[in-house]
Image (tube, rainbow, N blue to C red; front, side, top):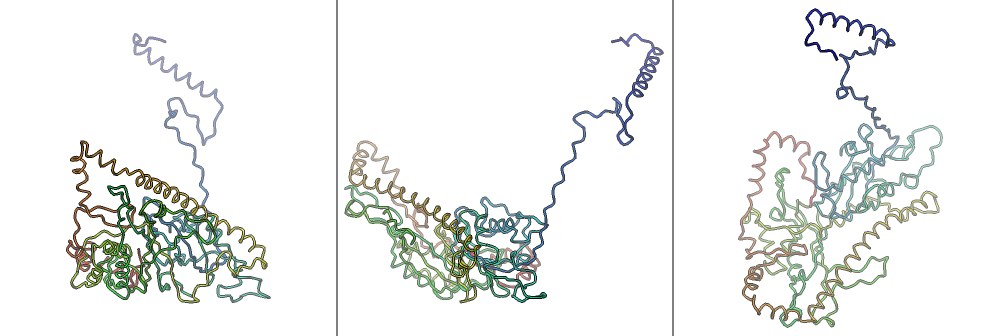
Length: 541
């Protein structure tokens, strides 16, 4: 390479001219490129890092399918709430777990049973409750299950376009053959194939009344809350025999539960939601009772139950626990109302409160603000059934009497597919039954070992041999604490029990509502109230 540092100015200029001439000759020797894509010179070349990316592939626009015919139907379904963040879905509201409604919406859109916006088959395609004529009977909270939830929705139909939804024929010639049940889309089977195993469509109603609303047409909602008695296992005494288990007074709970019946103001037995601005907390309870639950296996199974505890004759004084239910029937329920009601019953069953506490909580003039107390756990609660006026909804179950397999080969296929519904429920029950049996046997063996080997005496001797003072100090707080039953398997401990009516109280409902209005502004609430036509919020638990 030449050393240009010693060149004169004139020599450098001559060298540049010579190089430009060589570049021109080199460019002329190259094949000519099209005018649209000029050949770049080395000085104009683009570095590799800044070269334009290849054009993106055009995404296919979702195909928007126009439904020839639709119909308004009702669906009855069941779900186990442990894996869900409640029933209701809110667009844009991220939750740690999916909601049941979210899974139902996705199944309806994926199956093209509901017309998605812009042809989308994901949640963003949901046309809205008004667009799908969608309604729900009740909203369950996180962890709560339902065995008789009901929704109404407008879906795609196989009905010929010339036959209207009311059955009238608008066409020329003889109307086409059409059975509104046998020739219809297999709604139950299609949705169950797309839904998670713990959400099952049980039946559908082909002809709900005009203007049907699952919320407003429902006349009664039935809840059940399951709990065991005793709620704690018996502990071994110093003699190695079972001590008396900590039990609930079922008679006192039954007496108190009866006080819930009738129309009462439940503002002290629910959680107040200021965003709803509810000022009427009166609800009517048709039935309220405590009954022993039937723990027999399903009717289709002759398998005997494995007891959680050994018979009393084998272990001295251990009795098998019993399962009970708090049964509640009412028109509608406030937010967390059932869980507050059973929490008070637990306090009464433990002897910490008297049944008269319920009457006092209904007296909102005297008890104007809800006392602070914990509501019961969510897992044992089930929305058992939603009751509608007689003959208003004719439910078609997959293998019901109306589906005669002799009439249609299609129905025969549906009946075979129905086994999938039973199979999934059987697998669910079988898995949990084995877990229950193994856990019960482990508890049974452990308790028998403790009682038979008199381990308590050995523990007592070991403590007295050097760490007696330390052990007593460690357990002193737990021995003096009060256990509070809340529906879980591990009750909470309180240092000392304070009666409900003597506890701190929340602000009055009017104060809570006004504070929210001041924060949001009267115009905001007036517009929201007008949107819902001055009606109460849907029943919630």
